[in-house]
Length: 428
Image 1 (cartoon, one colour):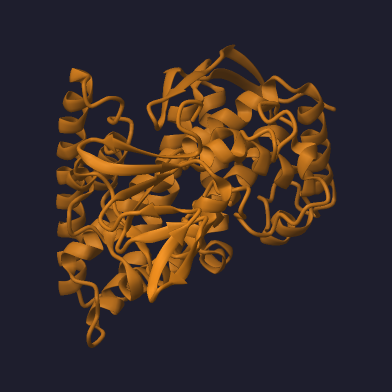
Image 2: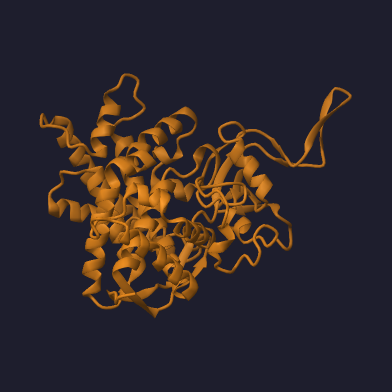
């Protein structure tokens, strides 16, 4: 950026690429989703996720897939089915960790998320089969991508592809058995997808169902576990934030008739304004969507205008992104822009005070992307953080054993993970 400015051309993994770190340009690219731009990733990502993966679908097909996925992890699905199971699983996992001594928080949260999302996707697996599927979800992640020039990248890529293959095999077997079964419906997401597949003209077939379940199992865990570890790290270094969070969550518990109940949907929506500020600030600094790829389907003029001169349209004072070029937008740079955020590297939840935090994104906050392809898991990520913080802060005291260190290449890589101890809290 210092050399070329906020919009420049380069090459990423063999693809001709335009990089944008300008908030207005990024917002315009998202606005023109499915018109001038479509989702497109370098070939190596396609290899990992599969070329026919629903993740790469566009237009009406993508819109329908997103709508279907909302049955599981959209706000209504979370409110109706998931929140109770998330509460119980979180409470059980933290109780288990309290007896184990120091532990890696990111890894623990990864296991937690997969443990509550997997049974909601496929509910009638045998315990040993479910454990095997969870293990493969854990091994199938995005941490393999560090540098195309590092041997470890390609070794990790092989492990990821093997885990993907094993997980797909388990899901295929479960799907075949469910299709052939005359038993009552299980009420899980697999039932929803099978109903969709039976509809006339359905976009779903067996392969696309398997791919969708794989995506949900991996993406929901990978980014959210990173965000949780970083949120706890930020809180541990800011005693004032920790005190205010404890006050807010203790007040929620005190108002309940059943003190042992988990966080309700109404409490989540109406009783934790400061927690919501902490979550937004943590997501801004964590920068889950470090870099997002699109492709121009036609020549696109950005920050300019077309002027008619002698019956010819001439591009005046703008940039032309050529058709076929990859566009890599970097919302992370927007989140660290000092012209948008005062002291942008400081963890300051109070910067969100008085702002509308109902929407997961805007021109200056794009942690879940934007436009038609805004991340379908945004509601799940925010609810997870709220539930985790609620049980974590009302039930336990914690101490940091090892601070975390990360670097970006361009995705987050933890060179040192956050290790903590937790113990039942003392009266406050």
